Length: 250
Image 1 (cartoon, rainbow, N blue to C red):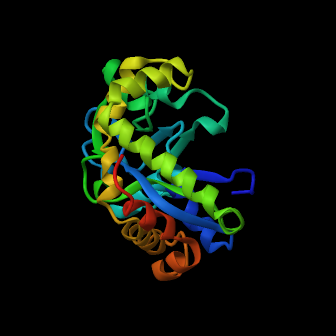
Image 2 (tube, rainbow, N blue to C red; image 1 turned 90 degrees about the vertical axis):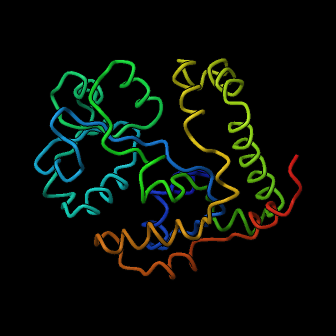
């Protein structure tokens, strides 16, 4: 959140930087789910990961910390982390080879692990509560951009939400476009991802509920000090979303 992007869409990074005073504003929820927690045999629950090693490539470490805290683990003391950003061996390959006990996957990683028959899923944020009841990806912008360019902001949000509708209605067509555009290499993985994620939920779920849920969990875990109400007051603007929801579907 250094001002290098006009828009971004990862929820896990928003709340701590909002508390820190970063001038960003969350505009809408985009989709739920997509992250899956894989583990080796003998591990059935996240609580079983105490003293174990967890790998991740693109998945948000903030969410992993929340998942650990949710079951009473100290994410700093009780778990060892291996991240792709560390610059060492590939965490996914370490998991496949049995050298680490768990892996938090972000598409297309879960699809690849299933295809390679590596481990089993102990948590799926698309289907498992409480995570499945809230957005995981939300669109945010800089407050200055929203103030200066309200028309452009609304157009960007409309385009993103329209894209979500197309993903829900025509997943195979979108998968082909993603692969042909060079955004993904494997059509089967892309198609599976698009079919599994309920992109249409942006019309049904309340993004403010999501902000409150994650802010409360971060507060309880000692990762932020601000109350959910302050985070929502300082870092959200639902005007454009509410206007777009009143527009007729096309």
